Image 1 (tube, each protein chain N blue to C red):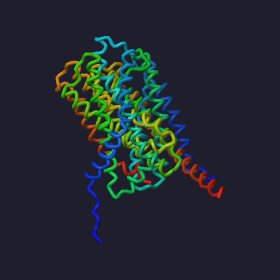
Image 2: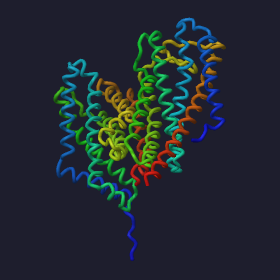
Image 3: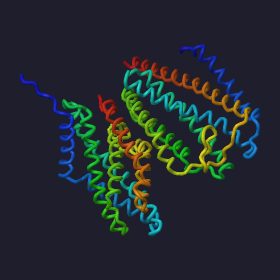
Image 4: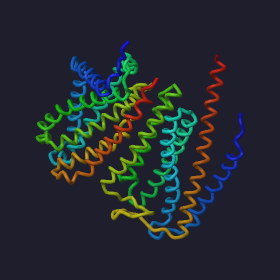
Length: 232
Length: 229
């Protein structure tokens, strides 16, 4: 068994550290929001996980193109790792948003464009895993996975645009706010520190997990090769 | 020896389309199944939603598109598994034609089946609920929606028949990807049915067009990687 590379080991510790700092910044350092109170603190991790969630889906689509062009299995491992890590982060985003929405919007869930798109996107990537699970040939699995992650990456933005035709109540904290949004606020300087650090922290954690998952993928492949050799 | 030129993509597309149509018109298996199924869905909706005239006004578009989507899945599955089961797909792949011709041929025949079913369902729905659905603007929306649905559906059906779960997997793969086309189709036809002007539904109508163009282009480029052995 090969050891974890040193950079990855260091990254593991850095991830734990930045997560701890980010938790401190979000829960203690950032001032309490005047209207919503403490529940607003969910916001920092909500945006952090949403950012890496979307980042992973974009990476998966790019890895899909790269695989279809180069037919290099490394791209497939990269793509599947990105989708897997992002699906988990995106689920956390939805759960955290729901926790915030209960006091702020007085409901756990509403069929708002962002929420709906998030749910649909999550379902696309669950379908992606079901598709992969149904194919034995690794080469075909990689091909179909690449095609599906590309189609998913194309479909999600259009879903968002279409649902936007309906009204939205999701607040936009950065950029222009729609008139009907509820629960918006503007950030103070300390809030911005916590916010940007959360983005940074989750990016580090995402890279760390992605790396682990890719490594796991190549180890899996090695085991399969060894098994095949042993049975022959 | 004389060179045997490769038939043009257009000719090959037409040949595959005609093959599907003529084999279907011998048995009417697929179309009759889709048709009976869509009537059953409409009847179930009638009881499930207790379609009072007032409720119906708002629900018409949603019911129609749910029906078309479900019936469409039935057709897409069948048209691809027929190719796979009897080894016809291998024959098609061996033919010296552009792979895009296979995709477009299959998409055209799937679209034709959907349109035939819709052409029968719409008048029946109109009679059952005393609502005239045979309007030109609505038909254009239905045509565009069906094109998008068939374009993505054919592509994903070609993938799902090659997996272990086969027919079960298609709706799971197709529905989340097809949500934009279904939503904008519902939005556009719902607007038209509740008496909106065509300019008021221009946005969902344009999104329908955008979806069709993007996904036909994407499927055209990706189909090769789905069928290669």
